[in-house]
Each structure stands twice: as structure tokens, then as C-alpha cells.
Amino acid sequence: MSFAKGFNHRKYKATPTVALSDRQWPNNTIDSAPKWCSVDLRDGNQALVEPMTVEQKLRMWDLLVKLGFKEIEVGFPSASQPDFDFVRALIDGNRIPDDVTVQILVQAREELIARSYEALEGAKRAIIHVYNSTSPVQRERVFGMDKAGIKDIGVQGARWVREYAEKYPNTQWSFQYSPESFSSTEVEYATEVCDAVIEEWRSTGNPIIINLPATVECASPNVFADQVEWFCRNVKHREDIVVSLHTHNDRGCAVAAAELGVMAGADRIEGTLLGNGERTGNMDIVTMAMNLYSQGVDPMLDLSGMDEIIAVAEYCTKIPLHPRHPYAGDLVFTAFSGSHQDAIRKCLSKQGDDEHWQVAYLPIDPADLGRSYEAVIRINSQSGKGGVTWVLENDYGLNLPRWMQIDASRKVQAQAEAISGEVSPQQIWELFESSYLKPVDGCAMQDFAISQNNAENDGQDMLKLHFNYGGKKIQLTGQGNGAISALVNGWQDHYGDNVEILDYSEHALNAGTSSQAIAYVLLSVNNTRYVGVAAHRDVVSASLQAVINAAAQSQSEAAGAQRKAS
Ligand SMILES: CC(=O)SCCNC(=O)CCNC(=O)[C@H](O)C(C)(C)COP(=O)(O)OP(=O)(O)OC[C@H]1O[C@@H](n2cnc3c(N)ncnc32)[C@H](O)[C@@H]1OP(=O)(O)O
Ligand SMILES: CC(C)C(=O)C(=O)O
Ligand SMILES: [Mg+2]
Image (cartoon, rainbow, N blue to C red; front, top):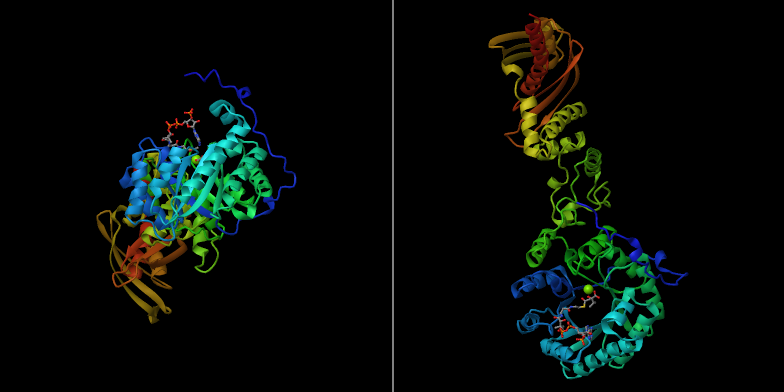
């Protein structure tokens, strides 16, 4: 396959920047949420291969209300009967809560405006959103008009909006105007058009929203922020209008543009859940709201049921969510790599309930979005001891000493490499069990008797123990300061090995009467290190079996070497 012959950057030119040398927005921070307006049911819907059915729209509507949206663009009711019927279903079905305002979109065309008002008849409150496009390309190539002609379309549209509103006095109307393709329009001209529209509406006293779209994202987000700041500083009657933004994601910066736009003075943000919308999508409200949340700002939306949000969005749009989608994707709170897992495990163990979140690699607590910690650490060949330790600790209650972590993670790593894939927690446990918890060569302890603090032996403990080895019952007797040291001495006497305990630990496995103890022993036998682990309902038995498991490995190796030599 060859590359496209026409790939040629000279075909394109840079988007003009705004002359704003004293820009203020870089000094600002966002410390409260903007007003949100969901356009899932309009912009999101108009971009779908199969537009939503009424049933899907109602599912989406119910979700948006549940999340806390107070303004929701519900469609383009003059465009089609299903859009019209949906608006009617909301109004006639009394589905619009008192604190929620519906919004509809319409072109600046009288018959469409008239039909939009019909669709909204009986609503307590509504926003009529009228638009026309203002950029040079749209003026010259789509509409074939000069600046004055395009401005007239907007002003005439605003006039019809005002006049038709008077015919429906029982509804509280807000008026919204979008100079479509604002970010590709000369900012002075876009502002002039908006001034004229505002003039058309101001005398009514109805709330006015001016919505500035990056209909197609065409420059870096700082350029958009300059445009927004320029507009806010120069538009007439700034104090009487709500400045809203509506960004698209063509360059992948819709969220950044909206955020910088709010820093530049905007009050309100339009977008969709998880970024559905034309081409690369609309601004993703989930991401922007969660960005605020992660900075300690109340987003004024309840996104704690992330899985429900995803389920409804996928059901309505038929577009699956990318596993790396910010905050929401399946893999976004998952670490496969060893050093990340190690850091997460250490931070989580130190994270107090009442302090600010300080966990490396996790920008927010997954639990806040209803996600469990199980998915946080997953194991493959990139993982290290931190990750394996986390899984055994969290899923199976094991508290491995450091040398045990290293030994166990080597085994898991070997398995991950062998299967070239993920090793599940269940597989890790099975590997742990078969590697450590099965007596070496069937070397299982049968019984033991211990007499503590034996006066005849300088107060030391005396141990007599039987275990199976190679089909024979072996008896060991030894004395020492405690059962383990007595066993080590007994083993040395019986086999002539030089045995030393390098480390030992044990803990209860689970609470309650059925609890088990697990013991971990690191032995040096004839200067070679062996790991022994054993679980038993009684801690002394677990410890003794762990020593036998470790020491028996040396016997087993010696026997193997002897067989080879003979
Ligand atoms: C950036 C955005 O997302 S804008 C929203 C876009 N969304 C949609 O278009 C979805 C719904 N739209 C529709 O279903 C249809 O476009 C309708 C029903 C509204 C209109 O359909 P039609 O009347 O067949 O016209 P069509 O959509 O092709 O519009 C083109 C005509 O409207 C004019 N027009 C387009 N936008 C506007 C506008 N905002 N204001 C005034 N006139 C406009 C064009 O100049 C063109 O006029 P012409 O026929 O004289 O050349
Ligand atoms: C109608 C407007 C607001 C729009 O959707 C856009 O410009 O992207
Ligand atoms: Mg749009």
C-alpha cells in the first residue's frame, strides 16, 4: 500500500491569530463550574448514523436530568416530525422539572422559527436558539453574500424570534444566538453581528445568551481563548448577556478550548456526554466537569454513576466508549507497568480518609466514580513485584515480606512472558498455591510434639516431629529457642546440612473462627537460599511446615544431582 500522493501541507494556511497583547486569561483560574448546557439530544443526535428513537431520547433525557443539567437542548423541532414529537412528548408528558429549561435550535428562517414555537407551546420556560454562519468561507462560498447580508440574516432571525415569542406570552422565553463558525470569523465582525442581534432583543428584557462556537476547531486553544476574551471585552452590554461556548474537537482540544474560554470570561458551556457529536465530536462535558472535580471545584453535575452514564450513552448513540477515554474508559484507572503499580500501592496504603487525595498515577479516586480498586492494578509482563503484591494482598489477604514479593513476582513474570498476556488474579493465586503451598516432593508434616521450656535442656524447647519424605516416614528431634529453631537443629542433625533462618514472618489469613495462619520462611541451607511458605489453621504447624518446605528443596536438589552423577 502506498501513501496518498496528495499529502501536501502547502495546501493549507494558518488560522489568523487575534491582536491581543494584553490578554488577561492566562492569569485566571477556574474556581467555580460554568453553567452547563447539554446538546446531546441535538448536536449529538444530528451526528449519528441512526438518530435516536423517541425511546432512546427519553432515556438520554432522564439521564441528563438525573445528572443535574439545568439547560438541555432537546432538538431541532422544525427539522423533522420525530424531533417535533419528542419536544411535545416532554411538554405534554410533564417531564420537564421546574428547575430545568429546554432549548431548541433553529435556522434564521421564518417558517422554521414559527414551527419551533409551535413545538414549544405550553412549556413553562424555554430557550430559542437561532443561528447563522458568519465566517468568510460560509459568507463567500455557501451563502454568496457580503458581511452586511450575513449580518441581516442574523438580525432578521432575531427579529422573528422576538416577534413569535410575543405570540406565546405564557412561556418565559430566553433568546440565544450563535454566530456559527465564530472561531473562523474575524472577531471584530462576529462581535458586530452579535451587537446587532443583542440590540434586537435587549428591549424585551428577556435573558440573552450569545453562544460562540468553534464549529470546526481550527486553531490551538489559546487562539480561541484570545477570541473569547476579545469578544467579552468589546461586545456591547456585556453585563446583560450570558456568554456561552460551544467547541468541537477537530484538533482534539475541545475541552482545553472550553476551559481556556472560561478563563477568558465565558459563563456557560455547551457540550455532550463523553463527547459525541459532529465529526470528532462536541466538547466532552464529562471530561471538563471531572477536570474541575479533580481540582477541588464542585462541577455541579453528579457523575458518580459513571457506568450508568456510559451504558446510556452507548445505548443511545451506538458508539462504544474508547477504553482510554478520560475518567470513563475501562483502562483509565488501570496500571500494568511495575513502577506505576508499586507507587500506587504505596500511596494507597498511606492515603488517609480525611486528607486530600495524593496517589501517584491516579488523578482521582476511582471509587468516586463507582469504580472498584480491582481494576486498578492488572498484571502482565510489564508488571513488577508491587503489582503482584497488591493482587495477593487485596484479593487473597497475603502480606508478603519483601523477599517473598521478589520471589513470587519472578514466577508471575515468567508466566506472563510464557503466555504473552495478562495474568489474572485467579491465575496468580493458582501459581502461588502450586509454587509455595504444596509440600515439596509430598514432604508433608504428619505430627509433632513440643515440650516447652524444658528444664533438663537449659529451658530450651524440645521438638519431636514426623513428616513424609520419598515415601518414608522421617522422624526429627531437636531442641532450640522455640519450635522453629528446634526443627532447624533437628534437620541439621538428621541430614548434616548447615541450616540458618534468614527471615521469618507469619500472619492470620482471614478473621473469624475459620481463620488460617500463613508463615513465610527464608532459609539458607548450605549457603543456598530457599523460600518456604505454608498455611495451616494453627500458626506453629504453618511455621514448621514452611521450614520443611524450604529445607526439603535442598534435599530434593541434592538427590537430583546425585542421580545425575551416577
Ligand atoms: C453547526 C451546526 O450544527 S448547525 C445545525 C445543523 N443541524 C441540522 O442541519 C440538522 C437539521 N436540519 C435539517 O433537517 C434541515 O437542514 C432543515 C429541515 C432545517 C432545512 O432543510 P432545507 O430547507 O432542505 O434546507 P437545507 O438544510 O439544505 O438548508 C440550506 C438552505 O438554508 C439556508 N440556511 C442554512 N443555514 C441557515 C441559517 N442558519 N439561517 C438561515 N438560512 C440558513 C442556506 O443558505 C440554504 O438556502 P438555499 O436553499 O436558499 O440555498
Ligand atoms: C449551531 C451551532 C451552535 C453549532 O452546533 C456549531 O456551530 O457547532
Ligand atoms: Mg455544534
